[in-house]
Image 1 (cartoon, one colour):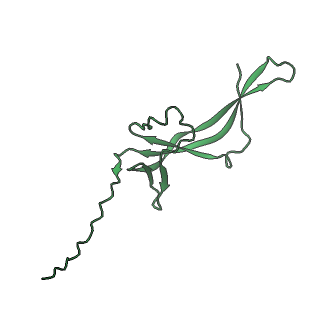
Image 2 (tube, helix red, strand yellow):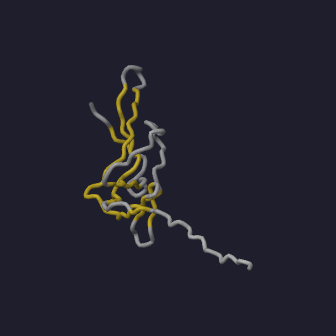
Image 3 (cartoon, rainbow, N blue to C red):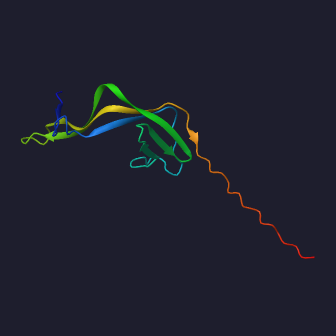
Length: 128
Protein backbone atom coordinates (compact mmCIF):
# COMPACT_ATOMS: atom_id res chain seq x y z
CA UNK A 1 0.00 0.00 0.00
CA UNK A 2 1.33 3.42 -0.90
CA UNK A 3 0.84 6.22 1.63
CA UNK A 4 1.38 9.74 0.35
CA UNK A 5 2.80 12.46 2.59
CA UNK A 6 1.26 15.85 1.99
CA UNK A 7 2.63 19.14 3.30
CA UNK A 8 0.74 22.37 2.75
CA UNK A 9 3.57 24.53 4.08
CA UNK A 10 7.23 24.87 3.24
CA UNK A 11 10.06 23.99 5.65
CA UNK A 12 10.47 27.55 6.96
CA UNK A 13 6.81 28.10 7.87
CA UNK A 14 6.01 24.60 9.16
CA UNK A 15 4.90 24.78 12.83
CA UNK A 16 7.72 23.99 15.30
CA UNK A 17 6.98 21.43 17.97
CA UNK A 18 9.21 20.14 20.78
CA UNK A 19 9.40 16.91 22.75
CA UNK A 20 9.19 17.21 26.53
CA UNK A 21 11.26 14.38 28.02
CA UNK A 22 10.75 13.52 31.69
CA UNK A 23 12.48 10.94 33.85
CA UNK A 24 9.97 9.02 35.91
CA UNK A 25 6.21 8.61 35.80
CA UNK A 26 3.44 11.19 35.58
CA UNK A 27 0.33 9.82 37.28
CA UNK A 28 -3.13 11.37 37.07
CA UNK A 29 -5.71 11.59 39.82
CA UNK A 30 -8.21 8.71 39.94
CA UNK A 31 -11.03 11.20 39.23
CA UNK A 32 -9.51 11.94 35.77
CA UNK A 33 -9.62 8.31 34.66
CA UNK A 34 -8.91 7.81 30.96
CA UNK A 35 -9.87 11.36 29.93
CA UNK A 36 -6.37 12.73 29.29
CA UNK A 37 -7.11 14.63 26.07
CA UNK A 38 -6.65 18.39 26.70
CA UNK A 39 -5.63 17.65 30.28
CA UNK A 40 -3.41 20.36 31.75
CA UNK A 41 -0.70 18.73 33.86
CA UNK A 42 1.53 21.70 34.58
CA UNK A 43 3.07 24.97 33.48
CA UNK A 44 6.10 25.12 31.16
CA UNK A 45 8.11 28.37 31.23
CA UNK A 46 11.26 29.56 29.49
CA UNK A 47 13.70 31.67 31.54
CA UNK A 48 15.66 34.56 30.01
CA UNK A 49 18.84 32.44 30.30
CA UNK A 50 17.39 29.86 27.91
CA UNK A 51 16.62 27.15 30.47
CA UNK A 52 13.13 25.79 31.13
CA UNK A 53 11.05 25.18 34.25
CA UNK A 54 8.11 22.80 34.42
CA UNK A 55 5.80 23.14 37.42
CA UNK A 56 3.53 20.20 38.22
CA UNK A 57 1.51 20.64 41.39
CA UNK A 58 3.99 21.36 44.18
CA UNK A 59 7.03 20.19 42.18
CA UNK A 60 9.32 22.21 39.92
CA UNK A 61 11.66 20.66 37.36
CA UNK A 62 14.58 22.39 35.63
CA UNK A 63 15.47 21.48 32.07
CA UNK A 64 17.44 22.43 28.99
CA UNK A 65 16.64 22.58 25.26
CA UNK A 66 18.66 20.12 23.17
CA UNK A 67 18.65 19.59 19.39
CA UNK A 68 17.64 16.22 17.96
CA UNK A 69 20.11 14.41 15.70
CA UNK A 70 17.42 14.07 13.02
CA UNK A 71 14.16 16.03 12.78
CA UNK A 72 10.89 14.17 13.36
CA UNK A 73 7.65 14.88 11.47
CA UNK A 74 4.28 15.03 13.23
CA UNK A 75 1.75 13.43 10.90
CA UNK A 76 -2.04 13.11 10.75
CA UNK A 77 -3.58 10.19 8.86
CA UNK A 78 -6.54 10.87 6.57
CA UNK A 79 -8.57 8.58 4.35
CA UNK A 80 -9.00 9.94 0.85
CA UNK A 81 -11.67 8.37 -1.32
CA UNK A 82 -11.30 7.92 -5.06
CA UNK A 83 -14.19 9.76 -6.70
CA UNK A 84 -15.42 6.66 -8.58
CA UNK A 85 -16.03 4.08 -5.88
CA UNK A 86 -17.10 4.40 -2.27
CA UNK A 87 -15.25 1.21 -1.27
CA UNK A 88 -11.89 2.31 -2.67
CA UNK A 89 -10.11 4.65 -0.33
CA UNK A 90 -6.47 5.29 0.25
CA UNK A 91 -4.55 6.74 3.15
CA UNK A 92 -2.76 10.05 3.02
CA UNK A 93 -0.51 11.53 5.68
CA UNK A 94 -0.62 15.26 6.30
CA UNK A 95 2.32 17.05 7.96
CA UNK A 96 1.08 18.82 11.08
CA UNK A 97 4.43 19.96 12.44
CA UNK A 98 8.14 19.26 12.70
CA UNK A 99 10.18 18.51 15.83
CA UNK A 100 13.80 19.66 15.87
CA UNK A 101 14.40 20.01 19.63
CA UNK A 102 13.63 18.30 22.88
CA UNK A 103 13.34 19.81 26.34
CA UNK A 104 15.08 17.44 28.73
CA UNK A 105 14.24 17.35 32.44
CA UNK A 106 16.76 14.89 33.87
CA UNK A 107 17.08 16.01 37.50
CA UNK A 108 14.84 15.28 40.44
CA UNK A 109 12.08 17.84 41.04
CA UNK A 110 12.43 20.56 43.64
CA UNK A 111 9.61 20.64 46.18
CA UNK A 112 7.71 23.92 46.31
CA UNK A 113 6.67 24.07 49.93
CA UNK A 114 5.62 27.41 51.31
CA UNK A 115 6.85 28.42 54.74
CA UNK A 116 4.18 28.82 57.40
CA UNK A 117 3.47 32.43 58.21
CA UNK A 118 4.90 33.40 61.57
CA UNK A 119 2.65 35.73 63.47
CA UNK A 120 4.41 38.41 65.45
CA UNK A 121 3.75 38.18 69.14
CA UNK A 122 2.43 41.45 70.47
CA UNK A 123 3.21 42.23 74.07
CA UNK A 124 0.22 41.87 76.30
CA UNK A 125 -0.23 44.77 78.69
CA UNK A 126 -1.12 43.68 82.18
CA UNK A 127 -2.71 46.01 84.61
CA UNK A 128 -1.84 45.77 88.32
